[in-house]
Length: 115
Image (tube, rainbow, N blue to C red; front, side, top):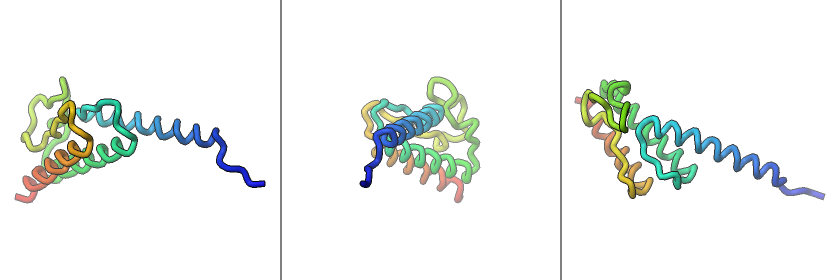
């Protein structure tokens, strides 16, 4: 007789997924990303990828993430260049639209580096 997956395995997988989602959310918040708490784990992972892509573009363009990242009140104190600052998310902005904004900002930051 073959048994299906146990509920223990399913619960463990769900717990792991939740824990990973919480870790990603924490990293995003440290980078100044506004989250509603309703984002799915897939949306959080996509957001993290977009933020990391933006940061790579800023670094390639010569930006200093220690200066350009949010420090207090979600805003950088004195950014090198405003195009090196991660765009803010509007309160009602869907994740997909915010990712599009981040990707656009990464393109702009990357263009600065190619000049």
